[in-house]
Amino acid sequence: MATNPAPVMTMSDYDREQRDTITAVANCVRSLSPSAVKALKGRIRAYLGFRADVDAFLQEHFSAICTVRCYESRQSACCGREGITTFFADVAINVLMSSRKEVESLLDALNRSTRDRKCVYLGKNGCLWRIKPIVCEMFLCERARQTVFGRNPAALVQWKRLRHRQRRYTWPSRPVLFDALEDYFMDKGIHSPLMYCHNSPGLLRVKARARKKHTG
Ligand code: SF4
Image 1 (cartoon, rainbow, N blue to C red):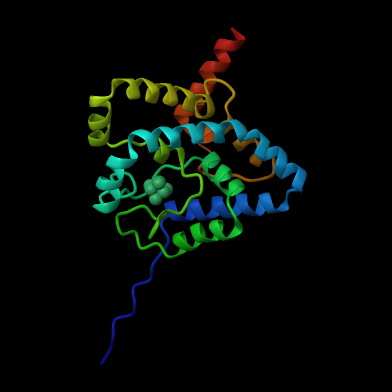
Image 2 (cartoon, rainbow, N blue to C red; image 1 turned 90 degrees about the vertical axis):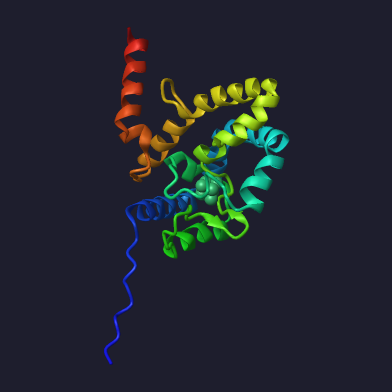
């Protein structure tokens, strides 16, 4: 009796872009001298400090509610999404701070992806990224926001300050780390669709407006 051939799984564009970018950055970082890696890590130090502050804030104000709602109930609104936005700098920073094994686990996840309506990077023990994408880090679902900020307006003020700090690294209306990291790796011959500071029409407009403002 004839049997149907097994369906051929093709990699989605999203997974391919992610895989290619992670691979290119990892290969590039491995080819750098120890002093160049040290210098690169020096450039992201302040950003990592910002991320530590966000982690501390989330731990203090959201860990209890998010643990119950999103982990024990397995209903995370963020990680349950397919195709979360990742910036090139997210990848570069994560690769720089990850072990080879951690990078391989991301590539394995992409290669094994079944597109089952949750983030491809959500592993058995949570997110596979060491320094997760900034979009994920700053994501608070509406329910959690209302619960925490409703009873603690001072926490909302703190959160707004953190969001303001985030823009100093990511929003290219002035020279920012996320844009500079794209430049750095482009100089090394890497090009990626995740380089939004160089290829998103919206962000290019932001940069053009800023240039115009500064040149009068
Ligand atoms: S990258 Fe990590 S934190 Fe972000 S949605 Fe995926 S599993 Fe969740």
